[in-house]
Amino acid sequence: MNVSQFLVQNGGIVMATLGAALATLLSGIGSAKGVGIVGEVATGLMSEEPEKFGKSLVLQLLPGTQGLYGFVIGLMVLGKLNASMTFQNGLGILMACLPVALAGYGSAIAQGRVAASGISLLAKNEEQNTKGIIYAVMVETYALLAFVVSIMLLAKF
Image (tube, rainbow, N blue to C red; front, side, top):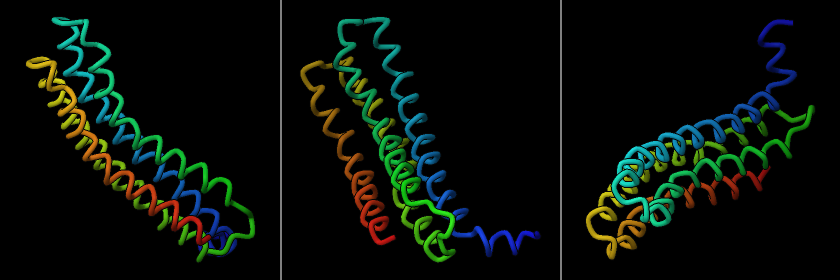
């Protein structure tokens, strides 16, 4: 069996599995980077003011949600896999995974940067912490929109 025969027989499941992998991996990598960015800044704050741990943890956790969105989409795709899946359906599922994969990757990193700035705000003026959280949550909006689009697209297959 050559590659073209393999794709004709199994192309649907290959494409759908690729979609699940991209949704999970890209959003997960973005979240890891975003959480890491915030963690670097928060660790510096903890050395000086450990009592601000709880407030900094909220900002630390925010970039991790994109990874969760990608994971949920990946699980939804795994529930749709079957051996008789057509190439067109598999390709459609792959395309449905792209919004959460790409927006999740980019927004998690951007959110990490904004949340890191929020940690700096927390360090300078604890009373303004909520404003830093609001700025970071604004970035989350676009990850949520992509998540909803991916869910709606997956419902078509």
